[in-house]
Amino acid sequence: MPSKRVANIEAATRGKVKALNELDHPASCKGKANGYMIIPLECFISTLMRIFTSMRLGTAVLVGFCLWCWSWLPALGHVPVREQRSSRTTIGIEGNRPESSSPSYFTRNLIIRTKIYSVRVAYPEFIGLGPASSIINQQIKKHIHKEVHDAQERLSLDELVPSAPKGYLRGKYEVCLLTPKIVSVRFSFSGYSPGAAHPYDWTTAFNYRVRPPRAFTTQDLFVAGIDPILVLSVLSQRELTLAPEQFVFDWVEEASGPKKENFRSLTFDKHDLCITFDEYQVNAYAAGPYSINIPYGMIKDLMPHNSPLWNVAQSDSKVYDDFLLLSSDNWRRRLAGLAIGRYSKILVSDPGNAQAYYKRGKWYQELQRPDAAKKDFAQALYHGYNGTDRSELEALVGPPDAH
Image 1 (cartoon, helix red, strand yellow):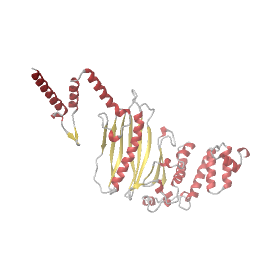
Image 2 (spheres, one colour; image 1 turned 30 degrees about the horizontal axis):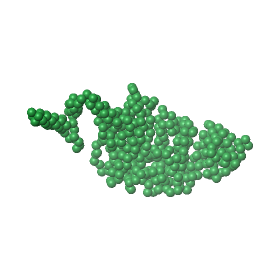
Image 3 (tube, one colour; image 1 turned 90 degrees about the horizontal axis):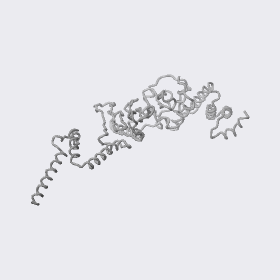
Image 4 (cartoon, helix red, strand yellow; image 1 turned 180 degrees about the horizontal axis):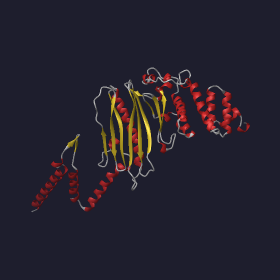
């Protein structure tokens, strides 16, 4: 009798094991795509239901709670792009690769979806640039993934807000210049955190020379001995001052001052060097980003002959006033003249601007005009200049009460 009961139990056990094996890999649910096992949704649900009905109530509730927590893990913190493989997170790369022997490009899209946010960023993939194509495309992907990673860090820290839209990150691009020698791309990003008053936007630039394939930076713009950041600062400040928009003086000084980070969105096209300033750099958010163009004709004499921009710059045949043309032997004096003219224009409309007097005095010193510099420093002190070198100015020109 006992042996008969054991035999019945063994038979029942074998039947359950066989049934579970069929549930794990039913014949109707088998399929492959891109090397991965594909299980239709209805088969997956029916399998779960059968497993749950074979459990006790307490065990089923515990397993269900664990599965619910697991499904939310991607939304609780940042999940690296290459590791997001949960059922609630989808990632894709879209874009078809055409064939071309000449320099060209096509669009790919990076797509990520979680419970809290979604990402869709377009970026170019270049072809027809020889061996440099793969290197440039790899660097563009690194550029995009860094921006997406930084945005994900911000989005993942936010929580779902009832009745608020999901967070998102969107990205687009513009190929500003594509030649057999150089690639210049401007990326524009827009992100939104759940519950925020409005999106936040920013731009970046990707500049790469083809032969040899390497990043093209501001240090590659001009011949040795030229300070590229100072040149870009003075020329951009001049353009912003001449613009029809009335920008706040302090914002312009900060956004276009001689700092490398101020020109991170520097790109090139067939006619100009372009600098983009994001929201809150030179204007309010509602005004959007603002771009200025500096013609190659003003700076082409500062470029080395082996620059990938040399041939492009030489095509600028426009005639400019002499004081706008910079060369390797006069660039500092020409910049000083442009800066002095700008600050003089500002002081006409704002005669009590202490910073403008101070900056103009510094440029007079550059021109070795000490008397003019002292007068401006005295006016700066009189109108309340309170910089870190105030004591030095007082030693040079005397206290403000003396003027």
